[in-house]
Length: 72
Image 1 (spheres, rainbow, N blue to C red):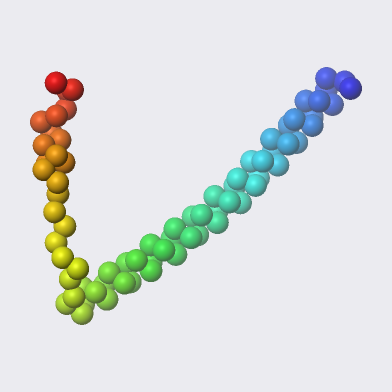
Image 2 (cartoon, rainbow, N blue to C red; image 1 turned 30 degrees about the horizontal axis):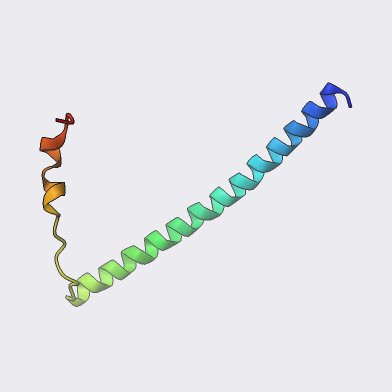
């Protein structure tokens, strides 16, 4: 086989892979935006109904993060 033919085959394979990934990425974007709107709607409903699931607390190790900067 000639070198040019090998390069063309590799180029076609890489373009095909990138097209497949672009299609998959577009699908993921659609799913994320759909879940985001569903999550926002359910959050509005729970706030409007007055139901709370409890308060979120930050662990003590996470509260000390600003003091931990620098690695010492």
